[in-house]
Image (cartoon, rainbow over all chains, first blue to last red):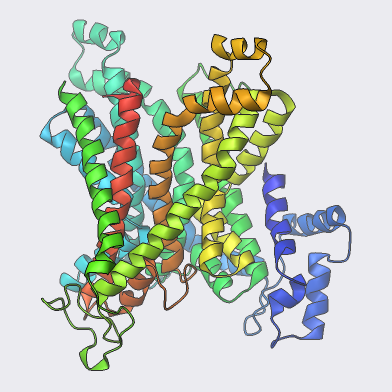
Length: 305
Length: 273
């Protein structure tokens, strides 16, 4: 899978109109030295499998080429590394909050099924989920940094430089992402929790006189979580898309905003590197979720499809 | 009974919301005849008023007129992208599910590879390769949607093609193409309809995201996402510039989402809570 993904990312360059090198460098900034360098880096002129093999080998060693925008000319791996921390922090914060709040809201909605609380939770999750990621961010900025000025609207300070300032800056971006991710989690938790609560073993547990809390958290939730785990794997995809938008809205120097900047500046090696990085992270996250799956549900064995 | 009503209600709400959006966008421009390109620099960033309900933009253009045009562009791009995903995804899923074996394996592997990319990131990569423009946005958004259609159609077809009536059609000597199109495809219809509504919601979102990043329809034909991007820097002094078009996008997405949800529950009673 990873091989196929990298091939697609590499191969996309051949779809550029005309000569890829000219297309990348543009007509005005054409420098024969850089062009030759790029031609060699991309392995153009060699048969495709060979060129791809060499490109992949270098990519595995951490050499993803050099940015072609003249002012920067830094190696793509350096750029990615510089920006990794921001994206990582943002993703972890958002995913943790989304899972916590989403699962809790889902449990509440399932327990209060078909009441006003349930309807409110459903409406809220569907609305935040239907809102474009940038619009969630804009509304948060409007309310929390313009109407009542409690959180900054953008910018970034490293966690190690000033932890308090860093967290304050991260509140709105991660909240914006959380709101987008938790809708799906809430809805899945609710429906699988409703299903689990109707199972016979819950009746048994109730008949045995177990406290309600034990029944809900130990018996029902454990069964209800299985589909939620699956969906949260897919949520990583939404997370990555959301990261691109959110970093742009809040001016965070992460990998998502690097990707957008790369596209706008037609900096193709940067686009390739960032896409490859994000997609590989997504594939790995899904693999991790599959592994987690076997831990929660012993009935599932790996290798069976 | 209570929950049946509830789900019917979500179908109804969805249909009303989306119907409202489509009617406003399509008929709105015929009724509301203000030129979306008319620049009036003496009246720039004016707040919403009776004469300009959404206020005006940086160049004093009327934002209702611009939002109507932008909405039409958003809708055009999203509908065509879903049509694109469907036109490729449905036949692929049909063939994969019906023929099984190696062809199935091959098609579904390719679909898995496409799905391995986060949707927006793949759309961004495609735009990076093809360049910025309306048609390229349609291809980019449509391409990312192909595997979803292929997967669900294949799933249903796998089940249906085992049924006796398909067997009977085979015994009668009908060709594979005829069986697929005339006997199998009609039974996949309801699943496709639900997926079309949900994919439409996703397509509107992706289109808005691309335009917001400046990678969608280029100026002066910005879609709603593009107008929000333009208004974003003026949030402090002119909140309406970004917020009102943003609400319009949200309504446009909410409609098909509600609709698809309600329809899915109606068609698949197992999911009813």
